[in-house]
Image 1 (cartoon, rainbow, N blue to C red):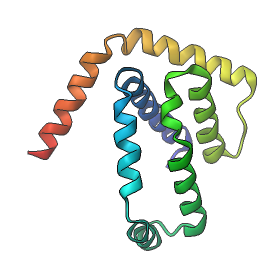
Image 2 (cartoon, rainbow, N blue to C red):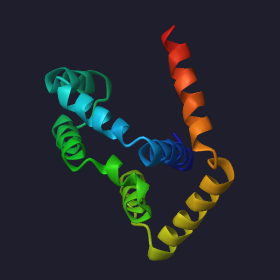
Image 3 (cartoon, one colour):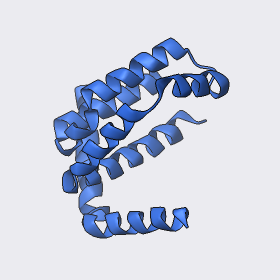
Image 4 (cartoon, rainbow, N blue to C red):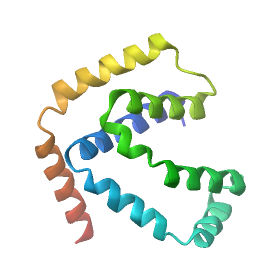
Length: 135
């Protein structure tokens, strides 16, 4: 997978998460409660069978993610940028410079103003998509 495409995809998903967090923080509570209910033995077996990753490192990352609860910080620009920086480093092994962070922050706010300026409509559309998928 092209890393730029991958990063763009992840960033878009993170921005959708940010909308949810800003307008429905209770979603974070539900999300982390659900993660805490996951049978980690089943998760571990799945990762071993299909992802062929270092399962020990994956599980350490998983438990850290559950403990730190990054999503709660997505509403704040500095916390959101920290999370973007972590994803970027994981995908590229490079650190974002201060200039990169400022540029990311500028463009994220610009995108939010231009395309995500009616968050409740976006959230309603997403809800309809997921409800349609269950039928």
